[in-house]
Image 1: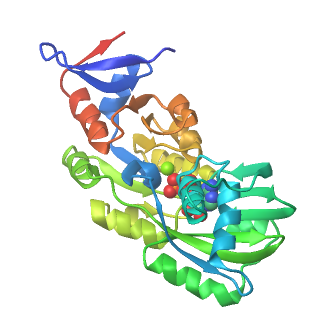
Image 2 (image 1 turned 180 degrees about the vertical axis):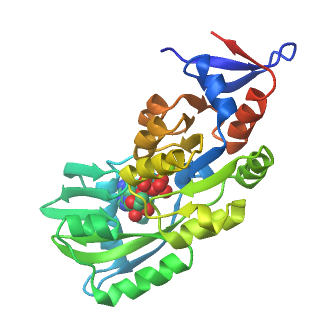
Length: 298
Ligand code: ADP
Ligand code: MG
């Protein structure tokens, strides 16, 4: 169906930048009592910055960053964009990264590709294992320490061996904490659902006011669907807000799927409602208004 827009109650005539799939979406919006939030790109800006590159023995940080950046340049994930940008600037602003061939990505896992003659894998531990690479004990402790300190860390492996890892940091969107407060005032239960590590998830949840018991971290894209289904089977009417390819299936499973405007096409296509302003405040507004006056425009 062609999306339609929402207008604030008659008289104001203000277009809200909220697109819905059809008039029935208003009813679904009114009925939700639980809002599942993706973290990266939904609660946080998703514009990550590389904090540190820790090389394994025999590697230097720049080599690790360049190889990782080359593969990540083919991915649209926020982690990928940050690593590629950092690799480009480390190499000097005019230079381009080495070409990647046979690129493959696993949403919620990582990427793999061939750079020069070398196979480069970047991603979480489980993605490394899927590619037959074991993280060395020597680096695992430092990796965990970086995560404990609030970073999102991803492994870089070259030809079957870990070459190092990259730590990144994200920041909250300015409106996220206030929006979660409004959602709670509306009687909604906010839940945080992320593929990222538990330490980062806990920190973000605390900053926006989500209860520790409503934080689910390290969740795969299929795990996100299961989490939504579980809440539904407990009797909740679930809205889910997300932006990534990794969120699409969960957005479709939710009673109301909400896509952030700056997110991926895949997320927008799976969603019932899209907020163009890319701010959780717009999600709160949509729910507030669905309970008062709203008009649909075609
Ligand atoms: P979120 O749920 O926070 O949006 P994702 O499900 O997209 O996060 O990703 C979960 C984890 O998978 C990331 O924290 C990272 O470890 C890994 N990952 C996903 N995509 C990539 C990528 N392009 N490069 C490296 N790691 C990735
Ligand atoms: Mg996301």
